[in-house]
Length: 224
Length: 406
Figure: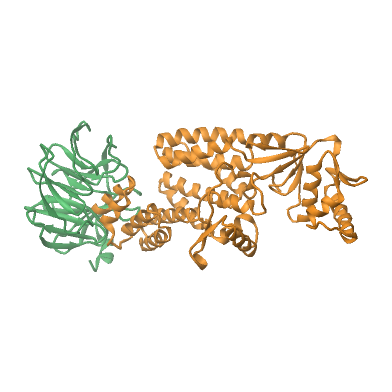
């Protein structure tokens, strides 16, 4: 993105409001990806994907599968980045039903499902790819100017998380040109590894090596 | 972090360096370079590991101070394993501070412990003691707690406080057991065994006897006049007189102390000190001169009296005399003791640690190499020296600045 630094000054910016923290969970030192299936929050913890109830905070399900980065849910299946591939997982059994190559060849970080496609954040390349969930073919690419960790879509808004040093943010970007439209600044020293909206007022954010998942309030934006 | 970095990091954490390299061998982004560096270090290729860690540290952006600091610490640890002690302590201290301000206590502690181990290897015991005193090891992972206790034990051993060392080693063993790191458990066990081994010999009234470290401590705490051939000097209680730079005087003193409580014949002294079996008048004149110098040097602690056939050493206030000898013979005992830790040392690191010039150390090494007591690897600046460990002997007393304070 070219004109971004100048544009940054006019962008609506506010402090992220952390509503609740979950974890750390037993046996899970780090969180690498987060998704939401309408009821439960799923978190990728390297050796497992676990699901917890956001009301009680209790872990209700643990799937035994490699989970090194982002997680997504398409209404039926979980998608999980592991090594340099994306596994399609049956959440009932934990079985991997299909795998496609990840577009960043292992440099992938965030993952979400929207509009019949998977959206993949490529960390240090500062990119978001829209890919075909059946083949892994890249359909289009959006560029950001910060390291991309989590990505999520909610109400037609594309949000991504950054983890690029000590001061990080959730940012809403224009899916057409990557321009930053809105920023939520996280407290100093807190990064986000994995981002998913609950479809309503909350974002769930993976907290990396803190082992936590944080719920952040989504602002009422001017466009809604 | 991205997916393959996480997967590779996971492989490294369980010691699968090849598995980690499999995933990131072709990547040149800074996190991948850092992991490749750590993998190479685990595989023992230290020069390559350092190069990769340096490139990684340079590659991280201005915003990534935490990642850069971790690379600096990892590189410092590799340098320590290579016994390259010439690195900048400031760089490491800055990295530790950067880690502390970002709440990475474990890596900050790792950085501080590397600095302490470096000071211990260089024989800077006061600095090491000050650094250790400032560390708060509470709530740290057991592996780091074990390393901290090992450093405490090493410091106590080298200043001959065996009870303190024993207690620290017991805590180190407990921590190493909880950490379940076999190499660490072995290192603690080895240090504990060192306490039970022969650390020195004493010659007292003509009888030679091996001593454990705690017995050496007891001897030095006793009220005897001790002629210390490990550190080349003499001491009574807290009073220490070094003769390290007066080799002839020290050789004379040793000969007289070994003969105590009797006297030692002139010709025997000449044979020992001037290395000749055919003494003439000039030798006897030189002996008188050297005895005069020695007498002046040791006057506060002992007298040297002429007898009918030679000279005798008389300690003040009727004290007994004991000679403390290295567990092994030879002028190069200190050098061998340093190399005895099994690591590869550069000539410059040895010179730094011994307080000798590089030339002196180089000459000694060449002699030892000819005698097959040391071996070298690499050439020119990359040359490193190795010796087999001195199995059966703890070498603590021969390390520089071991005791007593000068």
